[in-house]
Length: 91
Image 1 (cartoon, rainbow, N blue to C red):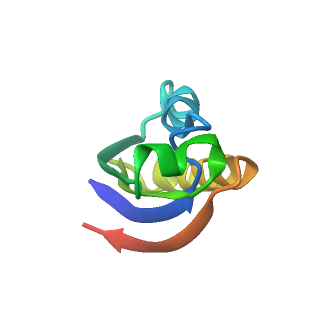
Image 2 (image 1 turned 30 degrees about the vertical axis):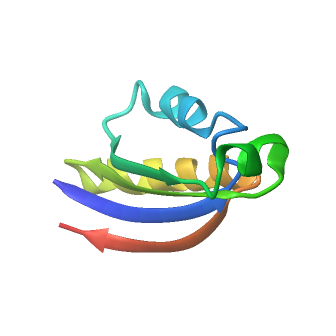
C-alpha cells in the first residue's frame, strides 16, 4: 500500500469537504484514512469566520491510482478554497 499524508486549511466543516471528497473517491481504488479536523471553536469556524485544519492520508495499492486521486483531491480542495499546508509520501 502506498500513501500520501496531506494537511490543508480552509472552511472544511462549513463547505462539506468530507462529503465532496467521498463523492470523488467512492468509485476509485483510493481511500482517505486517519482523518483529523481541528477547529479553534465551533462558533469561531462557522460562517467562514476562522478556517479549520484537516490532516488525512490518501492511500491506494497502486501508484497510478494514488497519483490520479491525489491530483483530483488537490483540485477539489483548491476549488473549495482550501490551501495545502504540506504533503508527505508515506509507506
